[in-house]
Image 1 (tube, helix red, strand yellow):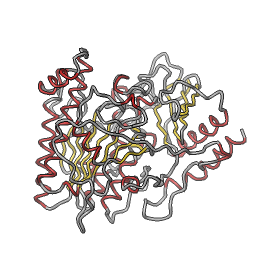
Image 2 (cartoon, one colour):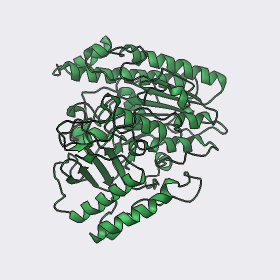
Image 3 (cartoon, one colour):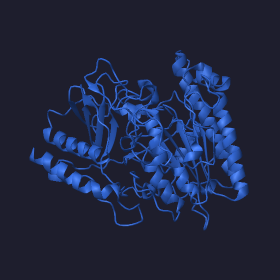
Image 4 (cartoon, helix red, strand yellow):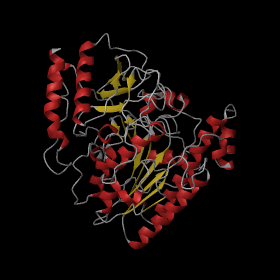
Length: 497
């Protein structure tokens, strides 16, 4: 109990300073919310990890692997976001120390090539196990907990009639006054565009700093149809290619966000991709599973088209491209060996791919440093090198030194632990939950029944061995840090009925 009070007091004292801390590079370093070794209970363990990829039918090589930023030229940025792509939902092996994640069913050769010539992260986490919260966090660099965007519009409360707690009602439209990556870069002279799935509310992306977009799209695409793909996976890429060409012609740096729609079955993929993955996976007959694999190949082909155009236009050397996902896969087979899937705070719902290539990023770089969706904004801001103040509410850390090959780089954030706040009923029968990750440990509080769980992810990747009864001091310390964070950002909480 003494330790819990000490942790909570320290966290609360640090947070008022952290929330208004100066941007990276713009003042004193921000002190983490949690001391890494409070009474030896919260020791942060470093675990670096690597990998290789499969090479087939690659569209374009990475000219940016060993390039440096041209003098006086702002770098360009292209973000690719997959829909419900799990940790093992590509053919990039994100963690070489876990052979079982080498998923040969998926074929993403351009992503493989991008990883081979850039950086891959084995411990990257989506900001939420649901799409809208993660997308809002990516655009804004703020956590879903701070934004109060913790669920989706279909049922804004994530309510369950038989549940014992009442979830909060979530915000379903990112406030148009929210600073975003687009508004930040546009203020520095960038041409900005968003194509594909928006799903951050009903307000047009142009209100958030995008010069052009497909509108405030959700799962139905700009045409509001049941199955946007395969038409849109090519259509949004065509529009992005034209935008990039025009930006280069105009001599402007550009930021393009390309977000794919999910392929839910074989009706949402091209015939060519379907035939190829069926030939490679004759044992898979489930249309949902083979459709997801073929849809991944369709998106990969279009990633290759974008990267080929960058090379053709002579800007590949000065362009950062990154790929990630909004949350884990719909089904566990695309997340295994991680536990569970989308709509849960288990690893299968939140651990996703991150592959990042570009100027000064070493080829074949592999890192086990923990990072998250909200880190992307601050990192892009640093890489862009603009003399523009960062938003005060920015939560993420700066991955720049890490991306440039410094494996010991300290990623400073306004807080040290990573928190995933998901106070809603969804795919987990255990109900609403919040998770905190620090060092090797992950602590989860399930609000229904006040259930607490603790896992050592370095030894138990599949979260099968609950250590909560064996390590009560660790549970108390992490629970205190979790509560301090949620209080500091004004998170909405579920209420016992």
